[in-house]
Image (cartoon, rainbow, N blue to C red):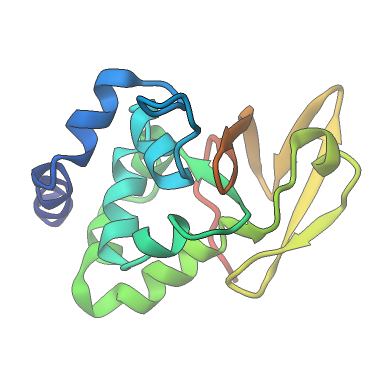
Length: 168
């Protein structure tokens, strides 16, 4: 995990995580919602995702106007990948592949859970479709369960998922 630690240390060294974890809420000091990246970092369960966004040079994109819908895998979801997968994806020479995996978790527009439950699929920013299914009030994205929905941000919405989506 040395590569992850280096990237995570750079992310933490920027002071973003520590400053945002202190609040742990979706609002800044002026009562306004934070963007998707800052909201995810403040939640404290997306350190691997944050490091991956940094390594793929996608932080500024997801801080943009949007709106975006992000299906955000937790740290536990990344940890469940085969050993060495995260380290390999974080290598500089794999930046394009990492970006493809990450953008496969993003849909243009703001899709709230209630709206998602009425869809069968959605096209990701990466270009491939993800399947959406719902049963008994729960939603699945491909084979991932949505474990927390509708975390609103200033430029979209985050749905927390329990596994990493891998494009074909």
